[in-house]
Length: 594
Image 1 (tube, rainbow, N blue to C red):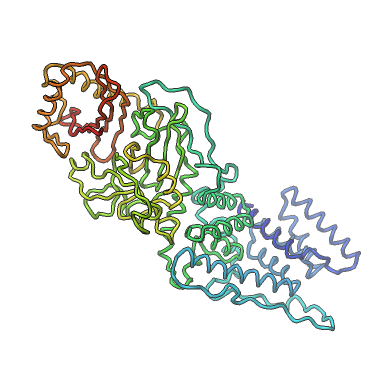
Image 2: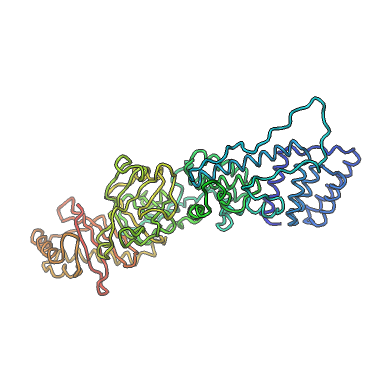
């Protein structure tokens, strides 16, 4: 017997028990003793994994006590264990129909769940259509009579029909069982792994790094212990993976109530309602029958479900950093890294000598993905950027939700590669939505408003670098040692040349195509000569050295440092853009930030 069958049979048995069906069959005591003996013999065989041998005993018990709900339930479980699912469903349904009032209560429960699912799907699709009232199709109980009437024969209790907008499951038990655990994007994603691990755990701290090595990273942990909406959605998935459908439904109902604009949560809630009713045909399939709903609207929500679940199932390995972060000084408190194709934004912070992920957030990107080249191409740029400002909701309007953090696109590297466009921001969502679909923006990075409010509060403009990658590659800091050392050597060669009386040695480090947006190579030569005349060969040091690498089709290094002359306390903050020219690293742009 498969785990799926075991989960479902346990659920069906629980439903039957709560329906109040475990009552006496009304037979005489000798017959009860005989049937009890049959059950004991059958259960003994089941305990020995001899299900096929036990089945005739369960069948005989039903023959001796027709209409006994306990006997019918046991036979249904036995049939399900042997894979005879259609027959098992028939036995469970027959057990429910042994009482007309229980049958009516069950029919009303199914109808109510179907109506509630319809409302949840309408909220998920935001179709603008109002579904029928939640009490549609519910039936009142029969009026009580003064003279007790004999209960009708089992065969005369009609089975209710499901509403026309949902396929009736009466003839195919396997189609009724499969969605209970398989249709919520869980089998393909291995959601049962959540049964033993609710959330990723932090790993113990490692030894402090050396001064020239970026600190190692601990495993991503939830941003805090509060149940944020995404954590609550993952908890629903975890409960489904454990086969705890009733608890999963309760959790989904609570989430959908608290976050009515969380469309994915509404869709999962609708699916769970249909799963309990036994009529779900696949992830979000019931939504196609909602007024204004179309099957194509489900695809973005399916992708969002996969992106969110994969991010929690596959966090960055412990002790790793994104390969773009070659060196990050302690003076840079935070860095933002974005995994474009996985719809994920991470915030990493320096804490106690380590670079620690403090947030892992769902984020939407451009409709056509990443790799922006032209204005209006609906793509999100790849590269290294600065946050240039902070715009609150009063300054940007409802379209940007909680506010925006503009990025420095296009930077000097983008202009060198002839990339066009502007106004690439991190921003929130419109008020009517909790989150946007994974690929839905005009090129910006879009987060839920609660997540955006946190970033607006925590991130410091002009002090927080933002790295956008097609796919982040998390590696051990040791794996970066060679490239890190080579980058540091470039900065050191510039420092040494800066102190030489011959300016040609320094000029040899600059590309022929040098252009910082204000000065070309000729103007920059004059600027360097002026600096040399003012400061001569004075000793100088480079502090707060930061080295970031861009992986965007043309490798580039972004080196930032503070140049402090001997005898000075403070120095100018410089940014250099390095790229290869005829196989040699050259500076193609440079500027003083402050």
